[in-house]
Length: 151
Image (cartoon, rainbow, N blue to C red):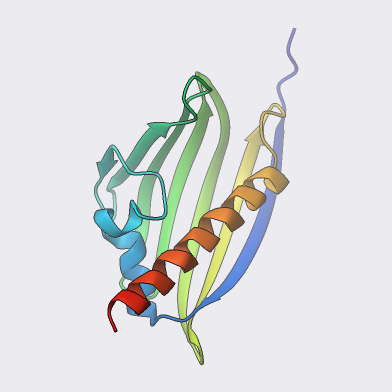
């Protein structure tokens, strides 16, 4: 018999981007922009109550499903969403995420806070934080490229 257990954890990642908060926010809100640094959504409805959904993974490997619902959106300032993550047919986590966009001397201070429940040892906060840091680095690369291209 498999043991069922839930591990609750929170992590916070702060990044500074050389782009104004409006551009950083748009990189999350616009589906074409977001697809350049985050897996392309199969469904993208950026509004309170709207859904963002994607499935994918390495060729021949496991399929990961990200299924989010936007809970609060304050343009250019904050996004709050809840999401589930599945690995094939197994639910591995349920999270609430807050992304804050604050003016900083260099452009934007982004504060990413995830409060998660990680299920039955299939995922951990440390693994999720590691993957999220990679994702936010990709966002930074995208914002830098957009800044260079718009000069």
